[in-house]
Image 1 (tube, one colour):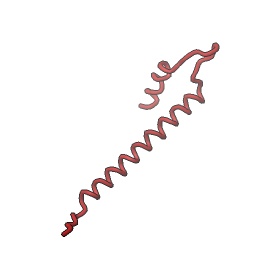
Image 2 (spheres, rainbow, N blue to C red):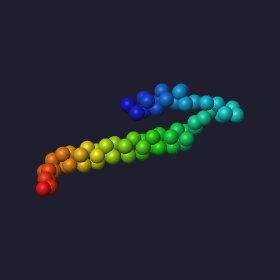
Image 3 (cartoon, rainbow, N blue to C red):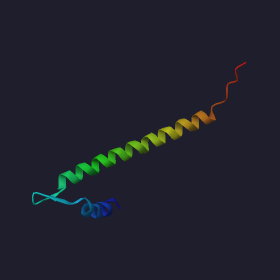
Image 4 (spheres, helix red, strand yellow):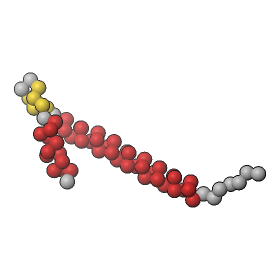
Length: 65
């Protein structure tokens, strides 16, 4: 599925600068790697926050007199 996205995104991002197509192969890989790391980081934080909130919800309430 990601290869299909990359194939169609290539036409969207393609720009010609000084007669050369941009982004080239390595730049496309760098852009994808940065996006993938960001998405994985956000997903990891979401999982962490979900577990943290669930544990807070399950914790017994301490009543202060």
